[in-house]
Length: 344
Image 1 (tube, rainbow, N blue to C red):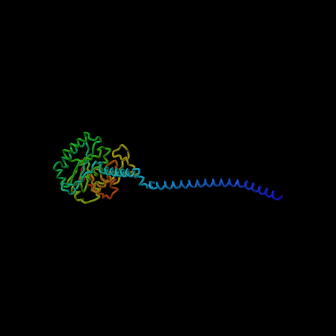
Image 2 (image 1 turned 60 degrees about the vertical axis):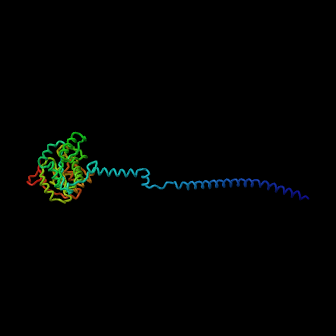
């Protein structure tokens, strides 16, 4: 009987101790459950977010812009079309310049029989040279019906002139009226007839005449010489079919570097220390075959001009396969009896 209370006391102590130790365990278990639920909730939320993002990406993938190339970007910005128009405009401008700044390309024409002409002779003239023109018309240059008959033989002669700086003024009107009566002018609409523009006149003359007339040769003549027309026709007739022909009284000469002197060359420094021009045909009269005139026409926009037209043409001939023909019958100041020109 004495041992029973001891046993009961011991049992009560164990139960009390067990009860005391189970409370923290329950709390730990409770908090563990809460933690697990929180983590599970976050994982579930993240999974939902990933699913939502995946669905949004899938929906937008079809509308996602493709990787653009440079060409695509130019097209989107409208630059590609602009670039094409700029290139077209540059090509049109180059063509217009090579045509002598003409508004419309002039049609090709030949003689009335449709055959290729022998020569187109362009006589340089100016606004104040009507008296000289009348002298030529009364001497070596045919007029009226005789001019038409000469064209039937394959030779065209025209006075070559540009337009006034003040377009449509009395100078232009007087030339128009004179041409209406004589019909012997080649009026170059794009060329300004001025002293400072004189060296460009050859470019306009050859570019314009090669478009209008289909000829073997194109002849430039100054208005201060008399011409043996039949002698010139005979010489050219013997040279038919000569491509690359650059014919004239060949010379070189001193480059004038002192401003204010006659024949001053602003680009004198380009001709070397000796200050000597290259070989070229003298200005009063020189001749180009058709292919050389066409070369000037095609490349007109980029051909450099110097102070004098004969030097300019000579510089252009240096860049092509031109056949230089030095014939002193074209030296207008020579004393040869068989020369085809003389100073007026």
